[in-house]
Image 1: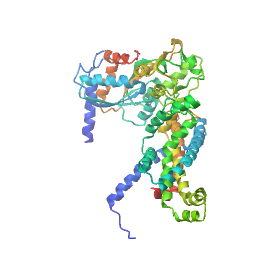
Image 2: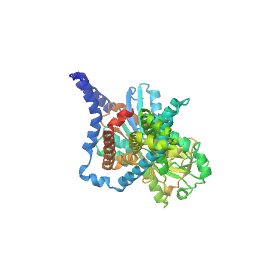
Image 3: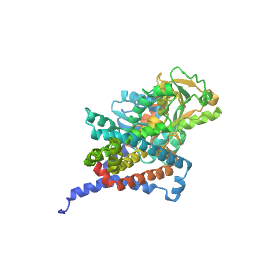
Image 4: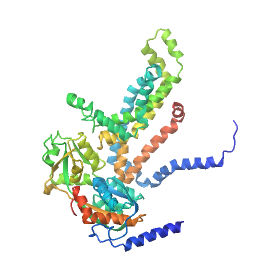
Length: 261
Length: 259
């Protein structure tokens, strides 16, 4: 490795780039009401939002694991026509504006939506304005992170272990459970954590599809948005919670995060 | 460079101050040279259609002007302005949020009331749930959405429900009054309390159910030029137009009443 002096222009531009991301955080820290921090975080509205966000993000992650791991397996192992198109469709929420996702969810699962109508008239189930709706919205935007990470893990694993197990007479399900899953466990874990972090920060799809009601659908980001107008201190403290969690995850997962993409 | 800009602003301010602009003049522009340039107007979301129309009317006689509108809940807009958002005009759906700007010494001249609005219950077209008044909003089979209590429309809605002695539980507190209207027009909610003007602007996608006078809350809309506007003359011209008979008739067309 040779180490050369980096060009000054690059260092300057890079420093501006860093400042662009760091300054907003500094601004947030600067405005944070440290003296009343604990009081602000333990207001009923803050606690309600924290509790709900915890439930919603964990449920979304569980749902994403249940559907996402098999989906990633299919992407990695089953070559079928149009796989790239299907993968693109299920990855879309990563770059789609979440509000658009929320509108689309309404047209599908809303009371007048394509499937929502059936759910309502046949089963009496209504998803918008419920915690289930908030979970669906979070899953919609967060699951792609899990799927892509797990698929990358499956593609990079050594398949000879699976072959060996099969020749020794293990069933496919046993191989998946005892060989594949342990081998890709780091990817599954990394994907789940990324998925959870994204679910925790979900705003646009939630407010569009699930609405905003404290204790039912008002997750942390929604509470931040509402509190900003009346209780800015609470909004800032809740923002800091989200920030610390997200930053902690990114630092802890730096190797896996970079490897996955 | 900076001096030149400062001079330009000073000249604009002096011109603006000299320009006779009695609120009774039909168009503030007829008495003087044409308005020019562009301004950004921050306005409560209930003003969306009326202000766009007013902007178009002014542009008809002053082809050189351009309006950029930022519609949202008055409380969000007030927060944005006090944090330095580049607004030239602020129109609020209530006095409380205008007061935030006044308190922050960010207005240029007094805030003037320019319109009033009333509440109405928005329901699905044809009113399939047969909602006759506020009392029906407490029915368990009625899915109700309100604006969040932090935004004017939500605050007024709660006042109105209190006046009627109705305790109704909304399934959602939407971020602004237009979001309430959307949820009703999409059929996700059976009813929402919005402004008369919102029902009018939805043109048939929702039906309005009147709220009697004794349960009504009148929303009073103040408007002000924001301090340090880069085009104070046009900002003042926009405000004066809204206060003029021509502007008032545009507002009336969209369901607003005179203050």
